[in-house]
Length: 39
Length: 131
Image (cartoon, rainbow over all chains, first blue to last red; front, side, top):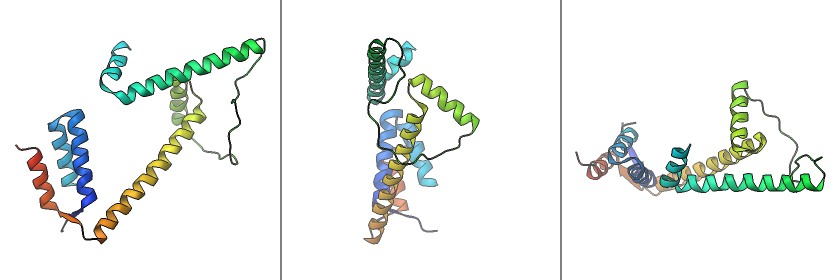
């Protein structure tokens, strides 16, 4: 299955990383990013 | 409780605004009620200062658990349960509007052929958080 992201979706992921990193640190941000990426 | 307040004050500007808002609301209600009591010699019930525009009533059923939680929350915040429900519905509607707008943005980007490959997303994550 080919998965492609729209540009707004990629931007959203980036913003989610910013938010999570700012509040909970880089390790948690990585976990969240991977959870979304692998879903 | 002090620790909770300190956490809110130190770490969360939105929480601080919320807390000040609640305290301010509580003070205004108390003050207004005291004035009414004084004016009516102690025989008064709280009613809205100005009638709000409303449509026909809509009846919503809650489970006993939901009702109990709602009542506890209303009591803790010193607000009417009905107000909390209206606020919750307002948030839901606003969220739904926002979500649909975001979906439309995504569909428009897809129509324009603006895609990012899945592998490139992984590269972005790896670049941001190198092992």
